[in-house]
Length: 371
Ligand code: G6P
Image (cartoon, rainbow, N blue to C red; front, side):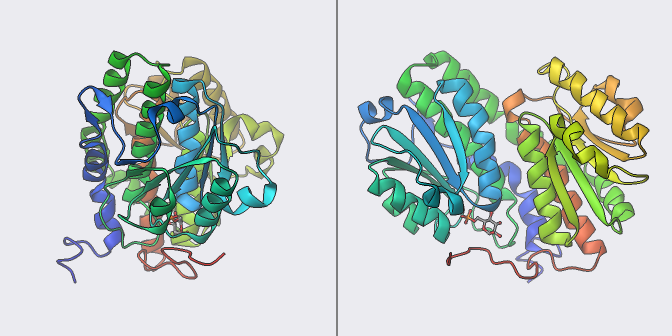
């Protein structure tokens, strides 16, 4: 069993280490002949061009990957994108027709809520594109187009490598749409793809430098609560960081959009409360960076213990970070592939310190096949 886990105590810890490969394998073969290609496409190029609205539906971590997809798809394609929890989607009577594309994201491809969302979309004549980690699962079988994530089997109940692979695959979906619609020139698509190809090595660098995150996790393992703040693509990362901590460590955790701080969450700040902040790049998003800086200053002044994930060389943030976790510089949209990783490591280490089995968190199932 130890060999199966590659020398780790838990599959999840091995799966965290496998993330550079999961991202690289998901990219592999999807850019050929100067074009992004899906794995299966039962839609004509014209049908793809005619899409005028996108819904993303998913559950759990896959939903967080969908939130990230919105930033890329809207930016690259100028298509409006709504991201919905699959369990809410079909009961809301969403407005769908044949020019709507529903992107269903599911590691297992069998999640009941996501499958039913797909069926509802198809009844309304919408087109469905599945992002899935399991060949031939029900959701890709019922979809009009499929992009498989190549994370390999994920045993840990809480998603790690499958999540990073989903985030990666969603970028490919965005680029495929941009290419079909002509909102990006072929050389721009090629450049984005090249930037994506550089990400696995950067994920590897994050993994090589997470030891201090483990030490910090052991220090904070008895906190009653941890808050997570982020903005722009850092916001879904904050949500994912909080979800991991809830799932694995049974610790109360909430992710907030940093801009909402003054509208409520700041009332929660008290002496010693750990707050993990995902900083945008000071170069890529200078305006947001300075806004986050003042957020951190505010919460630190109210006694919060600030843990800051920031780009290497971000000197401005140093005075406000009680603990600084540095990640390599990356294009803004792709930063979540890096900033998520220390949060996974943090949650796993808090959970282990508290004596929990991180592969099999209580009450949770790997795949929820009942509504
Ligand atoms: C469960 C798992 C999560 C996963 C979610 C969606 O809650 O514990 O890790 O993100 O289901 O699963 P799916 O297979 O649809 O991606």
